[in-house]
Image 1 (cartoon, helix red, strand yellow):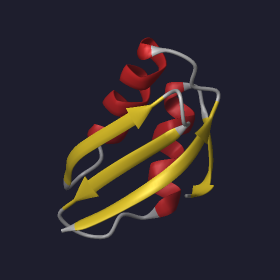
Image 2 (spheres, one colour):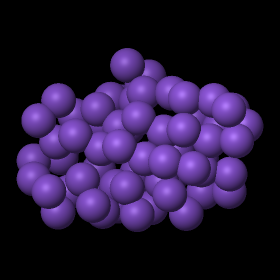
Image 3 (tube, one colour):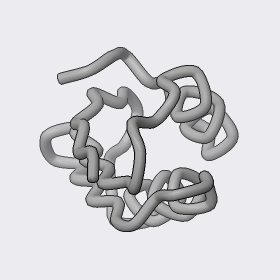
Length: 70
């Protein structure tokens, strides 16, 4: 298992959290996603280490910007 926390800009509400969680959860091997708008943090737990570019693309698809690892 691998758990990484990312900083995401633009999230401001529960809907934002849901959008990011849905897109990132669709990545292969992802077990859990916790997005928190108040802190701008998204914690992802997956079977294997994730490719940051894949996570960035998923966050972009949701309409937000991955700033980097927290």
